[in-house]
Length: 216
Image 1: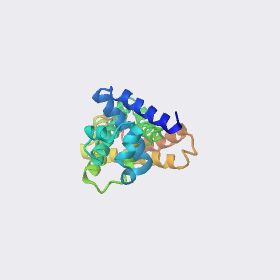
Image 2: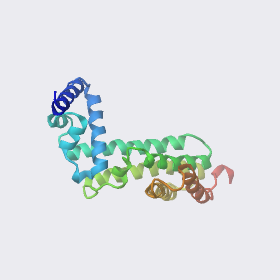
Image 3: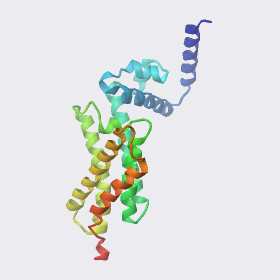
Image 4: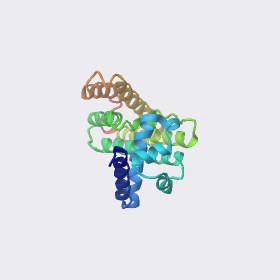
């Protein structure tokens, strides 16, 4: 058997194995392949052929789950937007000590951008921001993260929702911009924990000036 024959046989075997996947598992497999292709190539350069090949399936199988490239991209974007919102909410709920809350929330953003998949680029650095559906999702993730932080600030300080939201938007901006900048410096010339600690100290020196309403 030639090398080419062996490659075809291996691909056929892979397709036979993957054909037995339940629908939900197949969808996750396709999203995983799409994530690799979109992160590496961007939306415009990526092709459905590339994604199908990466997943080890035929294009008809891919189209059974996603009617087009945009729908596949949006499904992937939804997944990673939801992931960040969940990480922020988990960080906020991890403690009742607000200084530690700030550190945990900043840490959530650093964890998000540091993940080896590089999928944060789909959320914060998409090359498809001219598409309304993409802008809606990237706005939503910022809004929902800020709203989660706002609720904690408003409850603890007694500030109005509008005042608390302004502070929350500032904190989310500091978190995601500094985390992305840190990553862009060759993977972070400052160790991750040290960088997150510095940013947390900055954020806490600001928000810490708004004391708990029960301590006033």
